[in-house]
Image (tube, rainbow, N blue to C red; front, side, top):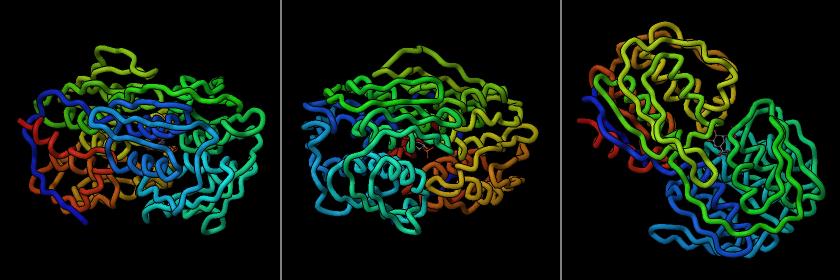
Length: 430
Ligand code: S3P
């Protein structure tokens, strides 16, 4: 059901917040633990719609997953013990579920079908279907094998050396999962480094993986052992509070227990170049991932920047909120080389351009990015999330610095990655 929320200008945000557990790491923990032989435990798994799609999918493949209040216990039987699902698997809104499972199911000796909601059924799937078919899987999908539903008849695969045309952790991970089963070695080479949670986590299970700059290789033949995993907080969810603190007068927010994996934290570099008050404190390691607390303070005189293209993959999920930050910076902020934004949960270039212009922002759209002229005194408006969780949260932060009332339609989307987002905002607002 469509939900809406009304927001007005906020008081300062003050205090501490722990963002929800990392979504990418949660998906991977669920999938990899389901392939190990024995019992694994996951602490602090993200209980939000996207990882729950993955959990249900692994259950449909015959894996026993017990959800206790303080941990998830996964009792799995090993790499070769998944069973044919009795029904179509619904991946909901989750691209990570669909693409990683397409890789995994390509190697299984049975038939399966993956589908999702209308957003996911319009997102490009050829990018996984092409390399997986090259490895020997039989895959059919709508619109000449480009859109879900995807029907997969898996089987014996051969390793490939694949030069991926896009920097995509979902494509890389799908191929590496298939490579766990394929004859010989499977290598993926990316044009730019995408998030590396898969290649960080899989070796702990005993998988044979090697990384050389932009190239990741996996060899089959290793049985996976169970592992206990603690999921750190999600940088992409923390980003909403980072930007809110920077642009709402008098704010100071300490965001605790955030994964600061360098393949995810381009936004920190961007904020620093804009002159934002941001400090990384108490750096440590949790389950093989770097973690820290992040302190952000209101900053007067933020400067617009030309975002370096090499930062794009490491802040790909932060663009909706980055565009809000750009509206409050002096001068023009330009993003180029970010055409991937057009194939996310919504076309994030056009949705953010459309919604921000309702608030009085001058936006120029390019095929691969946009430019925004700031600073803008935002005006409250009737806004729409376009069923996109990150657009809903970014517009909510924009509404907190706008004059007058904003109504955001479609706020139920935040449950995809951040149930409880509005309660946290309310608590921080003093
Ligand atoms: C993700 C990879 C990224 C990201 C998505 C999560 C992952 O997508 O946008 O939210 O967990 O692997 P792409 O692989 O399409 O870049």
